[in-house]
Length: 98
Image (cartoon, rainbow, N blue to C red; front, side, top):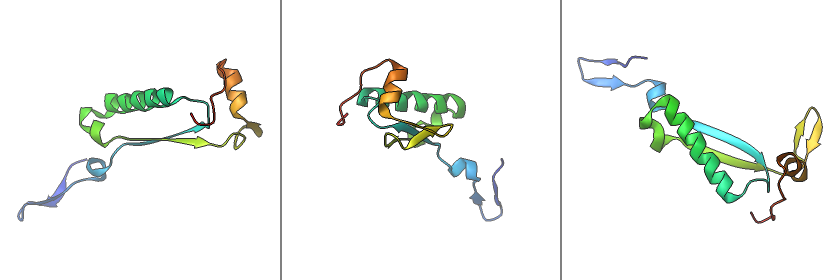
């Protein structure tokens, strides 16, 4: 999109895309991912956004990881727990403080 504005006064209004920052919200079930895995996710998601949008958006890219309580997530009407996800991953459950 091009810039809009009154060139006679020198004022220029930028478009929404030039003002918007990339925002990615990821929801995961609590106590599944370690802090290191969460950091890796944030890094990988940021890199994916930069690969598409360009290096200029790196410092403006917001990634939010939200943890959903065990059992508050469902697939096809079936509740999913932290233990269910660990079974799928083939990993041991994390402590509640992770």
